[in-house]
Length: 258
Figure 1 (cartoon, helix red, strand yellow):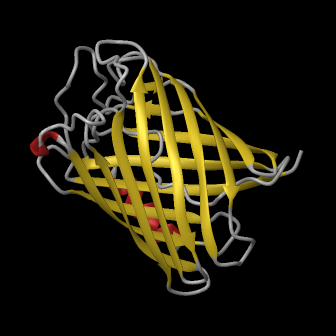
Figure 2 (spheres, rainbow, N blue to C red):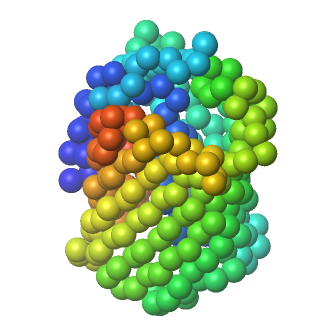
């Protein structure tokens, strides 16, 4: 089954891919590295049907390209872990560019015990040093509250994300509001199916007109059997301002303790 989904993803991304693909397309839940535990997730994102016209001068528009982002993570203390993203973009001409590093720090003081049912809550903070051409500014800060509930069969999570452009023409003291939501249900011991929703509403308190907002709904699959768990999802844009079709995959590669 895993090889089928990988094949679908990599054959689909041969079509035009939207510029400025996110390093990760993911709703944060109660996942947290144990102290001193090392981990690696590989994020692969592509948009077979989406925007190709630059939205600002010099924007990298990798039509027919691909974005691959290794995310290294380390458990720090009981309720804390940290991560490093190293996104790599390949455009349709085969040119490869490093999009710039991003650091994150996650705090999850409320979590149900292992295999237990209950609420979880915390916050994740990220700081990105972007190369020119991927966004109007080259410095970005994100604050991602995490709230949800899980049981043996169900998982619900919401991330009301706030992001600040720290330099460039879109710099402002008012953050953009980009909420995300996830609901998933276990079908078997190793397989879960669900829906994920992502929105880009514009500045907090001053939302963009509805026609300019981004709204995407994903059908997601998570397969846990084997040494490398797989998350795969197909996203559909819900309005004309959003990419029509987006594919994403996350491969979790355990490393262990140093």
